[in-house]
Image (cartoon, rainbow, N blue to C red; front, side, top):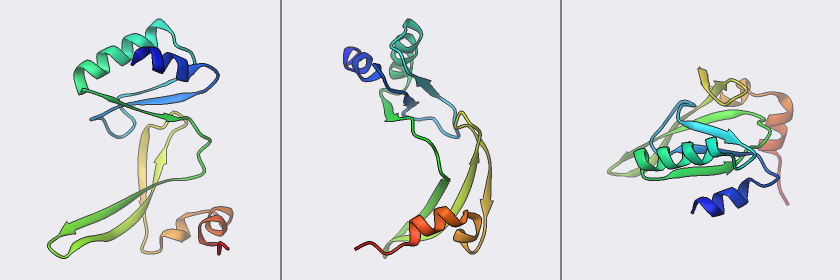
Length: 116
């Protein structure tokens, strides 16, 4: 598995996340398969059982969706805009009754445009 991970890192930035971490903790951004990356992966897999990997992309907006699961099924409770620093660590959260008011005009245009 670590050999596959090393191959993934060639020429790409990847964010590795501990399976049971939150708020920007327990993650590592890497672009080369260094000894430090391998040691972090081995330790994190040992502690959490697995890691999640995803490509590091340029962020447009960070957001969170809250759902409530009840007897009638799953229902959206609300959306929030999350304030993270450049490394993806949580700094705060914005809450509004109108989620799109917290977004810039370009982001709203992209999210709400008609497709087809």
